[in-house]
Length: 511
Image: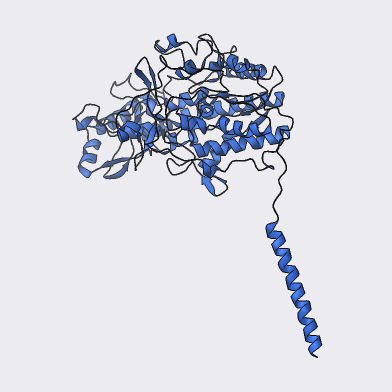
C-alpha cells in the first residue's frame, strides 16, 4: 500500500516539476524580431520638404530642441539603421526661438505654459536676446531638412524666397527661414533639395495654402491658393511639378495630405460666448442707447426691402433673427462680430453695418482670447472689443468661410492622392489622423493624445503645431506608410518610437 502512495507521489512531483520547467522556459524565452530591412526603398540620401510641420516648429517658434524632435529627424534616426546617411538640419542658435535681422526682431520667441495657459517666454523669464540673426550668423548647408515655416506649395519653386533683400519689402517677398538655408540668393527649396540627388524624400506641403486663409479669419489677406493656373500659381500644376521633379532621378518617397485645419485647437478653444455681464450692463446694451436702436433699424430696413419686392418675408425674418443683438445677466453672452455674408443695409442706413452675435457655428481664432474684453479706447468701458465694438473678420471664421476651407482641403487632398498614386508613392493620411485627435483621440502605447489645447498632449501652445509627442506619433505613421508601400519592416522589427519618450511641453528654463 505504501509503495502505491510513493509511486503516486513521484508521478505527481514529476508532473509538477515538468510544468515548472516549462513555465521558466516560457518566461525566459525572448521574442526574436526580424532584422530591419529597407525593402525596395533606398534611404542613403534622405531629404524632407515642407513647411513648419516638417521643420519641427512648435509653441509658435522654431528652436533647437523642437528641431531635434521633428518628424524628419526622427525618421532619419531610423533610416540610419537601414542604410541611411547623415541628416543635417539648419539648427537655430538657441532654445529661445525667434528671429532677428540686423538686430531687429522679425519673429518672437516661443510660447511657454505659465501655470494657467500659453504665455510669451519673456513674460515668464524676462527679457532675452534673440540670437538667431539672419544678417550675422546663418548655418552652412546643404540641409536634408528643407522644411520652411510659412511655405505654401508654390514657394518651393520661387527663386526669390531666400533673397535677404526680400525681407525689407512690404510685404516681405522672402522667407526668413529659407534665407538661413538657401544655397544662394536665387536658390529654390526644390532646387536645393534636388542638388543632393535624394534617393528618398518626404513631402508634407499644402497646409499653408489653406491655413493662411484660416489663420487670418478669412479676411482676404492670405487667400486660398487657386486650384488651377501655371506652375508656381495653381495648386494642381504646382504639386504635380514638385512630385515630377522629386521622382525624376528615381527617388522613392512618402507624402502627407492636408489636415482639416478648422478641427485644430487654434479654432476650437475660444468659445463664442465668453462675455460676463451684470444686469445693469446688459440692460444698457439692450437699450436704444446701444443695440436697441440697431435692432429697430434692421426691422425697418427689411420691411422696406420686403415692401418693395426686393426680398421675401421669410428671408427677411430669418436675417432679422440672425442679426438681432441681445444680452443678459450671466457669464455666457456671445460676442458681437462683423459678418460680410449678411445683407448690406448701409445703403439704407449707414449705421446698420453687417454685424451680429456669434453662434456655436462660428469659430474664433485662439489669439482672440487676449483681445476680447480689451478697450479700443483705453479707459473707456463703452469701447470694449467684442461687446461694444464688433470683432473684425480676422478674429472669426463664419460657417461660409469654413465651407470654403473644407472644400479646398478636400479638393487639394484629392489632387495629392491622385499624383502620389501615379508616382507610386506612400502616403500618410494626416487629415484622418487629426480628425481622430479631435474626436476621441488616438492611442499609442500607454498614451492617448487628443486635440485639446495644453492637456491633450498632441498640440503645442500655439494651437496649430504639434508637440514633440505629436510629431513622434506621426513619425510612426510615416514609417507604417513606408512599410506598406516599399516592403520595409519598421513596424515588425520593433523600430517604431515610444511616444512617451517625447515631451508635450518645454520648460521656460530651456536655453
